[in-house]
Length: 138
Image (cartoon, rainbow, N blue to C red):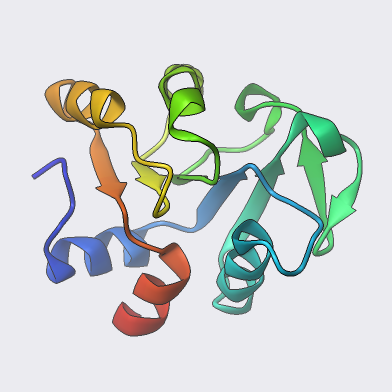
């Protein structure tokens, strides 16, 4: 069950989660991290943004943090918009913080990380867009 592929599992995860940490946020409205975040905000999720290049700035009305560790609240979903090579270390940082679902957007999938998180019993979504899935299932 840790790799969430079934619509019922995805819907259940999205319904039970309230806070999403978007890793790799960009202030560019044409970048997926921006428009996916905008859609998630409109669906009522509380978002926290992580990108050390924009630390201290505000994007979509939310403060940007340097790392997952810096987020002051509990995280339900870690939503990744980074290259696959960056994902293993992000997963380790996320495990230190704690989370419910580790979500790798299309193009960010790290097979190594998927396998490791699954083996360790974490819930994982890979290769699916949070914007599309939330619109479709909620």
